[in-house]
Image (cartoon, rainbow, N blue to C red):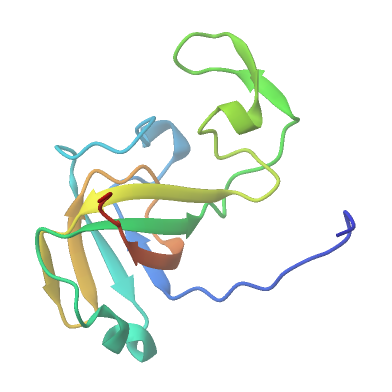
Length: 134
């Protein structure tokens, strides 16, 4: 694969949070944080079949308002310089955000949850069930 390879992703909806600016976003997800919603575009609603309140899911989203600012930056927690792949910073070549969350409610094309760490109207890329280790 060359550095010029590109891929096309299709959003499946949007993440709704109370956060309008990067400075408002929490550093990480918080199960006790504010109510957030995953709003799927109508053509993906049937994909929610089989999910239930209480299920743990992995959510992937595109941090569309982040910018690449170099391969190293200070940790927000300690100030120590680290490579971006050692941090959860949104400022990376492919700004994909991930969160493992618990479903509180599902209705129509919407999942209600808590404590996501992204801005309101962030593009939603995918939802996957968290697999339990056996």
